[in-house]
Image 1 (cartoon, rainbow, N blue to C red):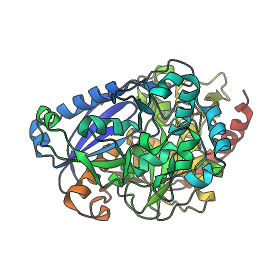
Image 2: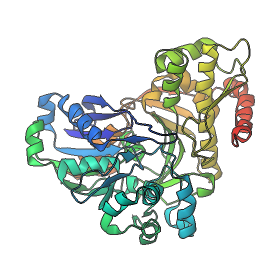
Image 3: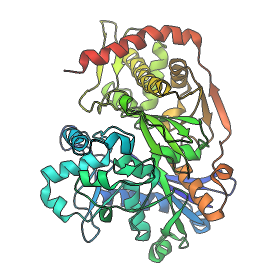
Length: 480
């Protein structure tokens, strides 16, 4: 058996698969986000570790004892700053933190070849601008800094004692030469850092260390290999077989992603498309990234008194698809693709005296779909062909939302067995590749399709005028 650990924003998931790739056990533990100031988003690394221990120990003892390898996946871009004793110097700054917008311009001015080296625009979500912010605002911490780790790689340090990372996660730091699959000395210098402060780099299917003996005893496991793994999106893609050129997925987690695997490095920074290494050797990927996806449903559930995300979907179904004029702009934490705008915020527009919670809930589902349509348009402008998307993440539980998404994106959606497990499944499969020596293509296969949603031309026609208004609305609210 093989264990995958996924450090998400809202919780840690642990999933165990057997040799056939089928999930035999899973468990999770929640996490909370701290927002001490506007645009800030932080978590304490010690909370990550406690949640990981809770999730692992919630797995059946006999399953833990049978694990042969561990893979890691996690939220990308977070900055975990360690001092000389390898303890965190401050709370980790997360992927959806927007405080470092000024530092993005600074980095691109200091290193004019930034886009050419990294294949990406400098964005506040990336790790490098966060370190530039710390240098400006917390210089005493910068002076004490010895190592920068991404969130899942802090877990690796606690698991094995090794400072290592995989290429897919490290590509989201803005310190990687993504085409060359190596740290860029020029990009590190732009933030006054060196390779000595970075973890060692591995392909996602390589072993980086071994589970510490005392921890293995505590968890009722053997001191098994721990594998590099991947950033959450790349690992999620591996879990559902999106590892070949042109394979694509739609992730509906806290954030939303359209992910396309590519055999070549194909950047398109002008449209805020991400171009990163994949977590399997010799592959890259393109992504459109939306900072709020299923998070919008959770927010709306509280704001509209609908209980939870399922309550939002149920209310939206009562209102129908495209039946009313309300628009929702899902920019609760700013937006990446295609706007690269950390300052824009969400809005409800076109409400009238008949607007109620159900109509607003419908607007939320439609608004997130419209944002993904913007992202997919950016990918297609770069020559990427997407006709079919595997769906992963908690937001993939709703077929009603799937009808909206398929029609707006003009793409067939495939709902897969185990797709809601997401990156933890992929991390476990990467561990299986490393331990068995099998190829990624043999292990990272597509799970069984449990449902498929086709685009509906009538829904597409009904939603097209609202999509056009949605696109005009961004420009209208951008400056306020």
